[in-house]
Each structure stands twice: as C-alpha cells, then as structure tokens.
Image 1: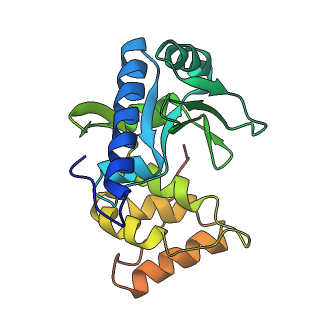
Image 2 (image 1 turned 120 degrees about the horizontal axis):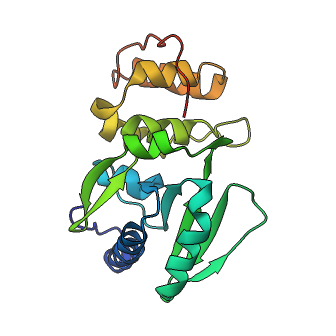
Length: 204
C-alpha cells in the first residue's frame, strides 16, 4: 500500500494505525474463509489513490457476516450491529473502525462481485480488493441532492481512471443525474473519454 503521507502533525501515526488494523482484520477474515474484499477509501488507496485516514471498509456477502463478526471478536475487536441494514461495525483495541458492508448503494454484495476482486499487496499482505469499476460505482451510487460533493471523489477517481470500465459505469449509473453529471465533469476535464453505456449491463 506504499508509504503513509504527512498532512499535519498526526497523519503518519493515524495512517500506520489504520494499516495495522487493516492487516489484523484482513488476515483474520482471509484465514477464516470469509468471502470479502477491501472496499471504500482503503480500497482506492490500494489501487493508487490517496490514503483513507478514517476507517477500514470491507465488502462481504451477507451470509458471511456472522462468521466475520465471530472472527473479529476472536481477535479482540468489539462488534456492533447499528440500525442501518447494510453494514455491521467492529472496533479494534485502538478504536479504529472496521465497517463490514454487505450492501452497496442498496445492492447486495454478491459472490460475483467478490470473485471479480483482485489480489493486491496491501501493507505487505495480499488481500482481495474490489475491482476498480465496482469501487467507482459504489462511490457514485449514493450521490443525491443531499450528498453531492465531488471534491473528494475527483482526485480519487482520477488516480484510478485507467483501471475503470467507464462504459460499464455509465450504463449502471445512467438513471442517476448526479452520477451522470460527475461523468460529464470527468469528460470535460479530460480525465476520461466520453463513455458509451454498455447495453444489458447488470450490477452487481
């Protein structure tokens, strides 16, 4: 996953802590046979984007949630089932949050999505990381009139642009004016070529 970056006085420490949590949780889930993949900001970082300094996100199939919780509890994590019906949470002894996400943008995480994940060396540990196309779709799906901030998305997506099937992204997100407008922005900034939506795409 490369070196942590220095932004202010504590970023290096926080990033190292998150990487440690990522390795402990990821290696435990992997050993237990949980069907999962690294997602969210850490997934983007593994694929070349700037690091996430907040938490660790894993996507997993819903049927494996009990095994994942049992595994992390055995590693000393404190687990929690929040009111939201798309994730559960685990906190390591340092207080770093791990989100176990089984639904992305109201779409259940599937075996097919996990199967598309690539093994990537993350902090010297090989972990499955969501396909770049799936990561971008998962980030753009929630965009709405209430959450339509492109500022964080732009540098992250730009760093991953060559790994993404933009025609698939355009097809999946054609229904969303907020996501579609972001694709227009990427095109106008010459980050991507104008995508041609792939017909008949089913996601996830």
